[in-house]
Image (tube, rainbow, N blue to C red):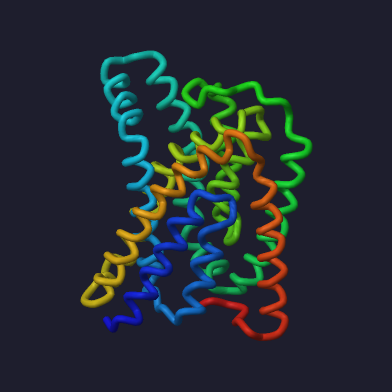
Length: 277
């Protein structure tokens, strides 16, 4: 693969690392970056594998807590089992619907009018964040490891919305958690932990279907994107946890609104295609 493609892979890796855990939709930004750089993602395998880099960043950042959780579950510690049970409950709705609808979404949504859908969901998502920040209920849960089962399950159902292009996975889980009374920082942490089974499951599903695409020079581009995504995501996780301790998500809402308008204008002017091949 030529150096230009490797540079494009690195750029997209940076974008993935920045946007995966912010409520601004990594899918939307990666699609636009691919159009801007001319990068060809075979069967979406590149996007899937660099997501694994972001997952690895979560595991690395929270390694101590994850290890304690694992040991606690082995030792049947009630608090650890409750935390793990909450994550499992939250992962069930998107896991089941992801298996059932993945092929249909690939055929009828991804590619077909995808950018138009992204423009709409960027706008609607921005409005939703502003509304939730203004009218959300008072926080009742501040301990990410002690969320009630019903709360975890509701967050899981909100996560299902992320199957729609342009709906941020992290945004759906964080905003959904805040809507059911989870404190902002705890909601953000839960979103990070929930990303591990959700993103890992989605990545394995995609790779099982398109693994034959990872050959030759394309594998080099994937390796570059993976490493860059991992490094950048580590920094974003650290920054976001500090940011939400004393700030709202409103700036991301305004960014989504602006981005949605820009994408809509580009589509209306014919500067970008309605569908992504």
